[in-house]
Every structure is written in structure tokens, then in C-alpha cells.
Length: 139
Image (cartoon, rainbow, N blue to C red):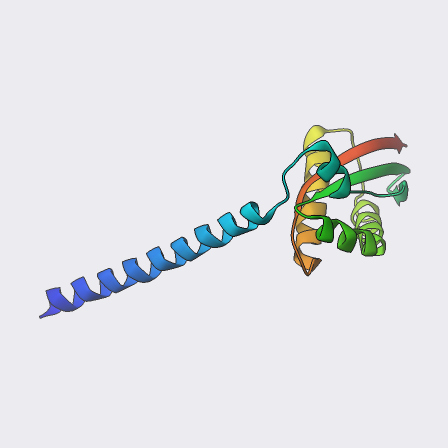
């Protein structure tokens, strides 16, 4: 009797887990399928470039700008309307750092953190990619 109950529990857990995984994969596929084709015209419409942002840190300052690529034009328009949030996030993140270096890892982390932050706040779509356009670090 215990073996049957154990078998039923394991089977139920496997089915629920498999169903959850299936739902997640289908959802992700829908997001990618709904993205506009990526040609130069669509890319330009799906891109938002920040103004130059300057922030103090430790003993210096950094001046930088970013390009955010959205999965749809509608998302790019929403990103543009949230420009103040982008600036606020970057200033807080950079100013909270005691040292900003030119290391590739730190710059990639900053780009990744911006992408995650924006995706958490967007109502529609996602930020597909974040690029750093320019940077000037002064100490």
C-alpha cells in the first residue's frame, strides 16, 4: 500500500512539474514569436537611446549613455516614457558604488542590472538587449 501511495505521489509531482515547465516554455515561445522581425527599419523603431547620464561615485564621476532594444515598437515607446526611471536607476546604482573601474565584468553587470530593472517595471513587452554607447570615467 505504501509503495502505491509513493508511486502516486511521485507521478503527481512529475506531472505537475512537467506541466509547469511546459507552460513556461510555451509562454516564452509566445513572447519571442510576437516580436517584430529584426530588420534595420524595425530595429530603429524598437530602439531607445538615453541621453548622456553623469553620476558621481567615490572619488570621481562617470558619464555614459545606453541604447535599449525592445521586443516591440510599443515597448520602445513605453521605455521612452520611463526615461526618468532609467536615469534614476543608473544614478543610484553608480553613486552607490565606491569604485567604478573599466572592467568588462562591471560594465556588463551594469547593463544586465538595467535590463532586469526595466523588465520588472514594463507593463508590456521586454527589453531584449542593452548596449553601452559611450562612457567616460574620471577619477
